Length: 483
Image 1 (cartoon, helix red, strand yellow):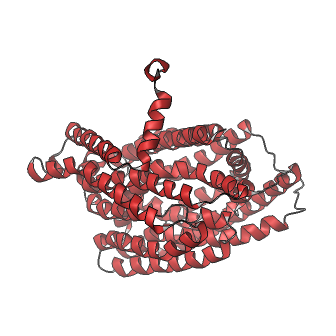
Image 2: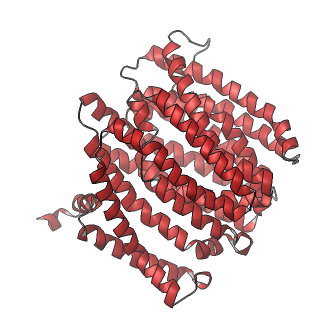
Image 3: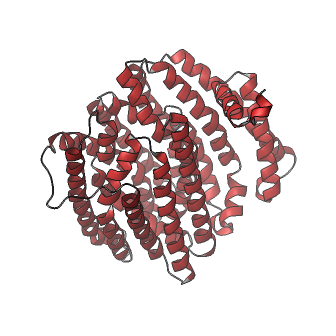
């Protein structure tokens, strides 16, 4: 599968998956679960995710990046996956009672027990997923991703209509994990061998041990905000905070995260061919910032009408949190592939050191800010994003070999396009309507106007993304229009 076709299926999976998750979250949050109930599940999920990173044990990256992969090695990977999935499941269940006591929330116990049981199914999806990535078979990944999210949606909405509380989200998560395993095995059967085949597991364990330290550090940085906010500010506060974080991160991922899945094997091929990585990396930076910056800036500026229209007045306090978190995402996307590149280049130990520093900084920023209040906690995410950039910038430049001059030019062009995209909305909010009074048609009209200004600026400043857009148009145009 070519990179363009792979990107099409990968982006398609993320867009369709985003729509499913988005619709589910809006219905559940607006009509069924208030912030405190959402906060309760967020605490349980964050706790589980701190442990769940070990169930992968770096297998997906190991398989996707291995130069040679035979049947014996695949069976060994499946065996290792089963062992770690069982361990993770038991660890999550063991944390159920201490977590419920720590937060003085007895309902956390059954929720965590339910989530822990879900991970028993992951060995039957991890290896098939990794093999699909390795072969760039993102069409099959599309079916796995979208199919499992559809099952999640059906179960969540059914239980919500039956009057369930936060527990419904845990059972929907179980349904998603098991359905993903079933779909994966149907599309690409990879049986877990019995008895387990552990011969030749040394390289897997060596890579996995380093990768797991990295992923755990990353998980702490990603999941600790909910845990810290929940501890100091309560369940309702963490519900509001996690809603803002989820909305911003989901939008960022659906725009740039889908392509990131294609970039790992693509850059692996560039590495193996001996070609320079700097020039293509500059194009990646330019494309990421050209698309993600305007989207995140728009989410920040229109945060109030978006939250009110989607989730209703009970979630109104989420808007000011979303403003700062979305701005932080703009910084975080400015230096893509900070995890992928060191893994590809064999610099994982140094990456772990940087990741630990990043995690400590993230926790300190949020811990201090949470002493003042919820808004300050959200603002700390924006401030931390700049620290994150400074931590990784020089390391990424030395490893990939790009020049800062072209990167800065890309930033400048993307910045101009972002300003142009925001101009109609900013002008409207300043001279025409208040954000809180904006209706759906007005917001859509301002968005379309912003997109037109954005496209015009991309071509005016000769942004690299303009060539990609032009290429997509040429490829999609009817043959008669090209002759």
